[in-house]
Image 1 (cartoon, rainbow, N blue to C red):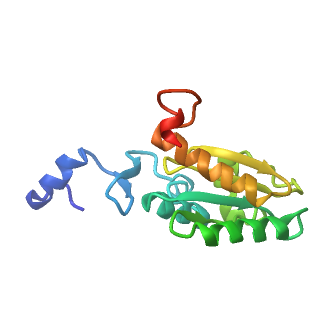
Image 2: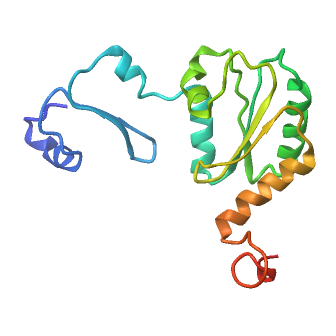
Length: 176
C-alpha cells in the first residue's frame, strides 16, 4: 500500500504505519501476528509464517477445541499404537478435539518442534494435550492408554471451568 495516498490513511493509523518498508502478517481473525519495520530479510519473513501443523493447531484453537498432538516418526517406538489410541479417543470426542499429527522428520515443522522441545533424534512417541488457550495440559512419552488421554482431556476442561480442586468451593463437590 502507498502510505502517502489519502485513501490509505485510516489503515495507516489503525496499524501505526509511518515508515517504509513495513510488512505486517495478519491472521485470518485480524490479529497482527508479526510485524517488520526494518531489516527485512527472506529468513525473517519466512519465520512469520506458520508450519502446516501449526496452522491446523491454530484453526483448532480458533474453533475452541482441545488439541491432541501426537509427535512421532513412522519408525518410532509406539508410533502406530499411539496414533490408533489418539484417533479412537478423538472419534469419541470429535466435536471437542482436533487431532494434529506431527512427523518430527518434516523440516517444515522445525519451529513447532523447537517450541515443544522435541529432540528430532528421539525414537519414542510423544503426545501433547493442548488447552483452548494453547497451554500444554499434559505430555505423554511412549505408549498411551485411552484412560490417560480421557483424563488429560478432562483436566483441560476442569482448568477452563475453574474446577479442579477438592473439598468445597471451586473444584469441590459442586464441580462434579
